[in-house]
Image (cartoon, rainbow, N blue to C red; front, side):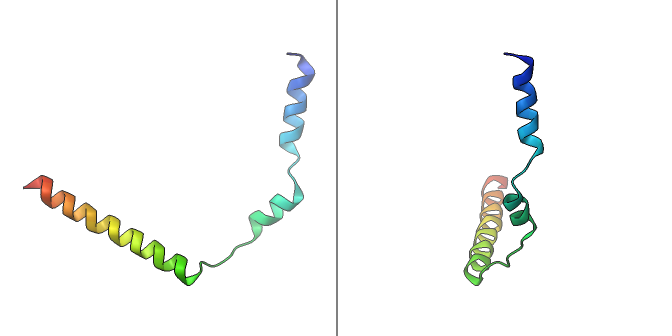
Amino acid sequence: MTKNSGLAVEYQEDHVNPEISAQDDEWFDLLPIEKKLCGISFGLGVALLVVFLGIFRF
């Protein structure tokens, strides 16, 4: 491994593609189905937590 190869890697990391950095600034609201799926997942997780705590505590 030469000293120059390390510099090339650092050079590539410093220069980010402008399209990628522009995409990071964009924000899209969740779709209704995505909100519903998040709610179902959260509710299922809480329900299972309660069930497992109830089973293993008693």
